[in-house]
Length: 290
Image 1 (cartoon, rainbow, N blue to C red):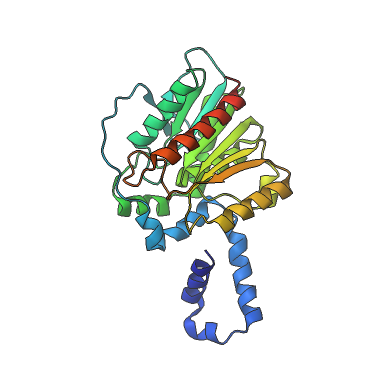
Image 2: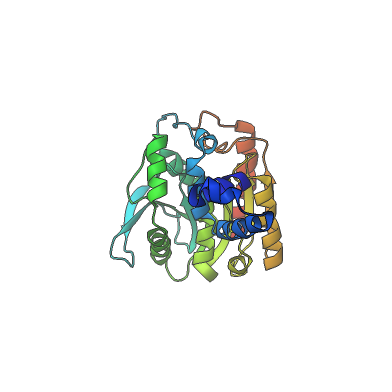
């Protein structure tokens, strides 16, 4: 990440100007970039210009999916409806799990993961996989890159708030997501305020701003991969920020690549996926009391 920041500075101010600066000036340039990195989800946009990061996202392997949920629409404050894939609890419940997509969009893999959580939580929790791309979905990495780069932060926040309103005033909401969605699992937890009861990040860029993290209403479970982008240093910075904010974080860095938990990913790691899912499920069962 340090190298990536330097590359952007070189691009912005020019190689000649850069060579004329002292080491103290270099520190002055780098510091604001590190502060901006604390924004979390938006920081991942910088990775789209990194071929190594893009290479971690080969096209998903097609598979047969037989849905048992349904697509629903709900009103958003900006006047444009939002939508998601809904699985209702077998009995009326205020427990909700919000599921956040990878950069591909709300595809069959995410819907299947939503169904898996719904089933393994005993059908006692409403599960909503939220469409953060307003209907855009792809299996092409270049197109996914375009969708992610073009995602508007204000619209994404509006979608989360629309989902919160759809769940209802008495809802207790936990969040889970992968990659882009992993970042939004934590971002959602911050947006939801007292409604939030938990957040699971699968190899997503975490918010590391202490003041933001102080507003969290829950602890966080982090399930990370071994990679250079969302690196061990970044994860440790997140852990330190959570501690300073007075919030609990439990995390593990798996010896597996980014995207390891996606069964449609050619680099899927079965063992790491099973262990991570076991941790995620146990976390959610404790949060929901099921």
